[in-house]
View 1 (tube, rainbow, N blue to C red):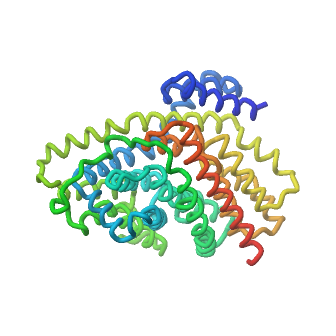
View 2: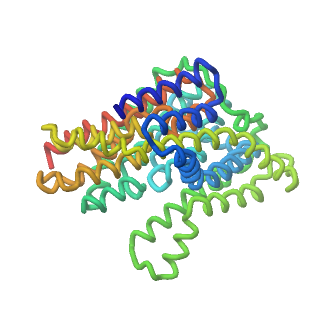
View 3: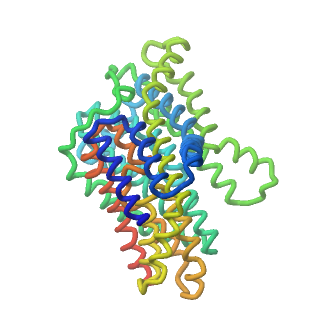
Length: 437
């Protein structure tokens, strides 16, 4: 019965937004209350769960999204994004710009958390598409596919790293296997799949639509690339230093602070403020006003993401994740497929890839000990399953929809389908590797 209620809640959310034209944030609150009552949560605790889910979700994202919006606005307005776009097109050619963005997303995505990578790379996507009149979804989706794959498959991202620890897998081997699977997955789910999406109409947020500047007035190539990549460099360097251990050393402590995504973005924003002043060498007050406008542009995105976090919390508190897992645990399905399937179903119902991955691991851990499964491949199988079919209860779905400003239908047939392709190809890669290792 609980599964039916979850299905009804998701359908209700879709209908409120698409048919009744209710604001997405308000629709989330209404559906959260409905789901909480229908799943027999104590009425007094429903709003507490909604507030907790919203707080937990925004607590980790609000600073990142706000700083990322400011950085993106400044990179775009100063002409740095235009310089990056022109340099990429010159290096790869307009015909292969989607491949250039795929490579960018893959390299950036290894050390960078998904939310940070998204808000950092979206301005780059929009600058390329605006400057060269390319379809935004078809051009940008390959980069996001690369970010998604690294988020779900590869340490040091939170879910794969936690799964490695839970299963006592080998971090290095898991990373190696993950890279072997990730490369063909990104190619197929990225440039190959996105070539079928060129007819999707997309008008990105005005915050990232830039006025073209004369080439001779653009910032230099080095500073244009360097400033947006400062967070990548800081976080990547911190990850490398901290992987060496010695948690008591001064270098370890400093790298942990400087490599925090919010701190890294703040440093990048400071650099953008002082080194990317635009062709008119604008004053600090003009720049600060621009930052205020940038935050206004993402307020509704933050509220919608908070609403998705509330729905996730309601479903988690109801125990639906464990119910799904226990139903499947007694089946005769091969362990690697079972891990993927449980994670995929929890992901569809709850929305969070991290919750899906860690819940699956907790359920299957005793089962796997008796089965003698390759734990490195199980980490990747569960990671792939946790990315399956992102939809209305996943903040990533709403970030894509709102940033790219596309319809629900087009979000499903681009973003949701891309995530599903990534998930299924990930499982296929795991099963193929299992034959040889």
